[in-house]
Length: 441
Image 1 (cartoon, rainbow, N blue to C red):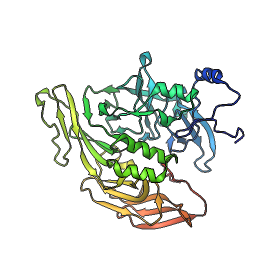
Image 2 (image 1 turned 135 degrees about the vertical axis):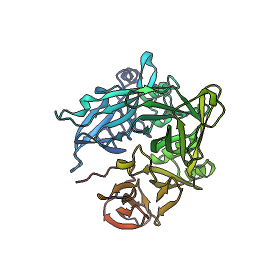
Image 3 (image 1 turned 30 degrees about the horizontal axis):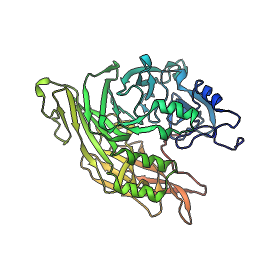
Image 4 (image 1 turned 120 degrees about the vertical axis):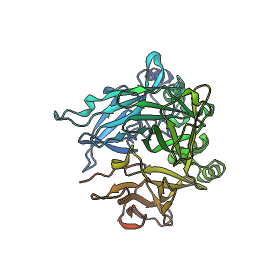
């Protein structure tokens, strides 16, 4: 506000050049590193006894969970080798945090590091000081890392899905400093690579020498990942087509013409919730055969002569013009384990206009919807004395920004049948939210 211009490049906007700097001074500032956003607007997660707001950079912001005041900004680069990290870490019941971020490996080759932050110990030392890299996944392209939004974790394995949505690193570094491009302008698609799935042993930090491949899709959120009789079951919210995802990101940053976005959505293939099954034991004698023997899924995994394992999914949700996204489960009890229910946001032409519950076994669905009401990600809160997986409530922030706007409210639904339990209205403007956290007092 003081400079009367945008001074830091964001995801969908770029900083206007400092009029006091010429092209040469901007060029030399490139070598000092890129100044990135401090806008930690995507998610909140705990580390030890502290809470951090985050986006998808190496900076996370410690906050006071009672007053929401900022305490300090933390640079993950000072603790562990990552150049950025996702806003979707896995938090184990003992407080251990796992996350993934890209980094420069040997000879400036790109890679993806899984980092581990231990729970608070008896010495009360900041867990950040004990952060470590657990395992490193290789990158399929030396100068073009894939966009990474989430990953899968089970008690024994880590699953990384490498998609064809790429970030042109050379363009990113040069354009950001010299030509005023933004983050989105550096996206490109390499659909011919398809999708590569990488698996590592969690405790040993050892990559499995198995080449899982499937046709191209794009990915934001894992629903859940679990182990079953020598297989890994990986449930994902997938998007077909790079342009479909790009338009969604465009809309999220309010840069697109709404009518044009809807026209593009009508032409694009529809997103799906999919189940992939990865066999953990391979016998070359089974070349050409489907290796999946689980009775409850139609997903297949075929061993090819080049030793790749070609995966075909089972579709567990697909609706005309509707996407199932922002998935949440009873994470504390069923994260990384066999489960039945997931809750998600229903997107109609990218517009979040409903809340959905999905039975991933029977594909039965339940829906909450209200005219001119736009909910946020559903947060599942288990009943303290729950006997069943879906004993609890679902929380969502709902806004009505149209003509004659209604108050925003916190919606509370019965998690079993998605019926309304209560709502709490507030007479303030609330923006559309991404993700959140329920914290017991």
